Length: 324
Ligand code: NAP
Ligand code: G4F
Picture 1 (tube, rainbow, N blue to C red):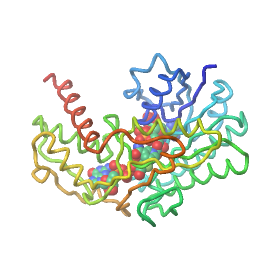
Picture 2: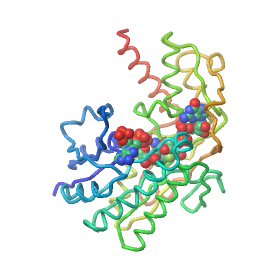
Picture 3: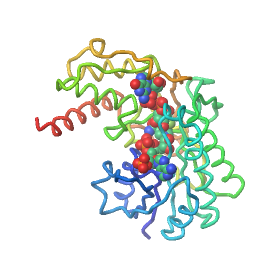
C-alpha cells in the first residue's frame, strides 16, 4: 500500500529534503502551503509535478482539519514555524501563535479527524538555551533564551502531552542546527557562505556579522530528515536528540569558509552590533546516542564537508546568475 504523508513547511529547507526523501521511497506527498502574494517554491521546483499541494496555515485550524479530511495522510511531519530566532524577539506574539499554538491546532486536528495518524514535531536544540549540561541529551532540562525557544518548548511539551493524554503516535525530534545550500540567507551559515562567494567573485568586500564566539553543533539537513522519518517508523513514539556531537564557533565557520576560496576572514568580516541578540545561546553540543541506538541513525556529513558544499553551491549559483 502506498503511504501518504503530509508535510507542513514543505517550502522550507527541511521540507524540501524530506519531500525528496519520501518521494524516493514511494510515498505520496501532500505539502501544506500558506497563501502569499508571490509563490515561494524555489526549493521544490524540481518536485512540483510529484507533490500534491494543499492550502492551509498553522494559524487557521479549520484549514488543517479540512486537509486531513481530504487527503487522509498516515504520517504528518510538522516542520512549519516562524523559525528565525532574531525575528522572534521583534515578533514574539506571531512566533508564539505559529511556533507554539500552531502545534496544538494541528495535534487537535489529528485527534478530531484520525487519531491513528503518526505525528512528527520539529523541536529544537534552541530549547536548551542557557545549557544546564554539556553535551545535551533528551534528559537535559530546558532553559530557552528567545521567544522562539520558549515557543518550541511549548510545542515540545504539548506533543508529549497529546501522546500521554490521547495515546497519539506523536514523536518529537530535538534537532540541533542543520544547514545546507538551501538554508535561508538570514541564518549565519548561509549568510557567511553567500558572503564568501560574493567577496571571492568581487561582488562585495565586507561581511557584517554579530557574535562570532557563539558555538553550534552544525549538521547537514539532508542527513537529519532521515532521522525524522525513522522516528515515525518505530512501534512506540518517543523524543530523540539529533546532532553530530561536535561544536564549532561562528568564527571557525568563517575561517573555514573563507579559506576555501583562499581568503583570510579577518580581512573581510566586520562585527556589527545590529546582529547581536537580547539574550544569546552561547554553546550547543548534543549527544545523539539514543537516536543512534534506537533509530540506527548517524550523521554522514562532516563539518568540513558541509562548509565546502555550501561555499561551492553559492559560488556556482552566483556565477550562473552573473553569466560567468
Ligand atoms: P524554514 O526554512 O524557515 O521553513 C519554515 C517553513 O514554515 C516554511 O515552509 C514556511 O512557509 C512555513 N511556515 C511559516 N509560518 C507558517 C504558517 N503560519 N503556516 C504554515 N506554514 C508556515 O525552516 P527549516 O530550517 O526548514 O526548519 C524546519 C522546522 O524545524 C522548523 O519548525 C524549525 O523551527 C525547526 N528546526 C530547525 C532547525 C534548523 O537548524 N534548521 C533546527 C531545529 C528545529 P513560507 O515558505 O510560506 O514562509
Ligand atoms: O544561524 P542562526 O540564526 O541560528 P540559531 O539562532 O542557532 O537558530 C537556528 O538553529 C536552531 C536550532 O538550535 C533552530 F531551532 C532555529 O530554527 C534556527 O534554525 O544563528 C547561529 C548563531 C547565533 O548565536 C547568532 O547570534 O550565530 C550567531 N550570529 C552571529 N552573527 C549570527 C550572526 N546569526 C545570524 N543569523 N546572523 C548574523 O549575522
